[in-house]
Length: 168
Image (cartoon, rainbow, N blue to C red; front, side):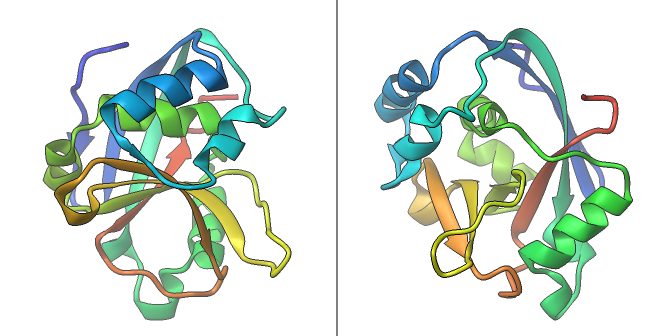
């Protein structure tokens, strides 16, 4: 994986991730050894949508929650803003790479406590959005499946990860 450098400005954090060729089950083993893995997260890694790539560069843009006010800081509105800025949805692999790459200290340096990985829209039986989240909850290093109402407002400390337009 590439070095740990990332660029943070007032509104956006930018970093490059390089895939490792690990499969979903390999990621689960690795992440379980080094981080806390939330229930249901293994579903992402064993799903047919989990695409394994090797040496693919992902250019990630993390929109900081403070860009949005109140109810505009919800998954539905943030997704719309990201797409209107020409950003793309993340592959599931990006969430695993982010957790492996970023320490809790790195996330804190970005001014965040959590990063939602903006995947292609998926809903559960109750129409809640299903996303991945990388966070430093309780000072611990987590990666989890995250389910939330599409219009539920989030705090300023949440970032929203998209792929830069240069990524297919």
